[in-house]
Image (cartoon, rainbow, N blue to C red; front, side):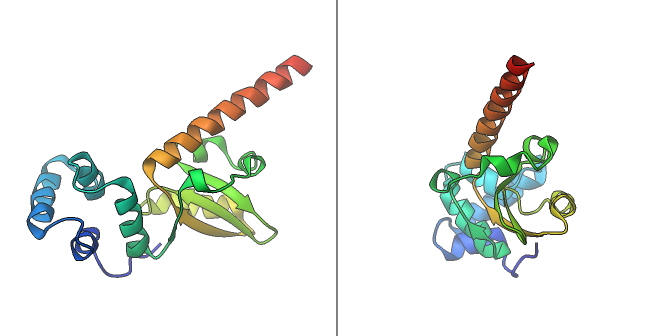
Length: 157
């Protein structure tokens, strides 16, 4: 996934979400604590998750979605390794014969995206972006469904 050229901070300033001085303050703080700039801006109340989602979507030219607004094909998640979903926060939400649509919340994790491409091969990977809180809620639901499925299997045996 490639950046389109602008930095996240530039996008947020150009959209009027933050001022240049707020950006400089967060950049200076980031040098000390090594957190993502977007996360720090949310923590400071400068932006909200939707602002970050839309800015990252512009920066990486990837479609933004809110998982609460889409129907997840939970059957598709069973075809993906559990560790990719829970540990690396990649959630397949739908597929067809040629493509698997995968939701992520960190577009900078190239290693995970490469691993996901290998898992869906020979199909193509379509990546969409969501918020951290949407991803966390979806993973919680995935875990609940997985436990429920295991309990059903145990009852049958």
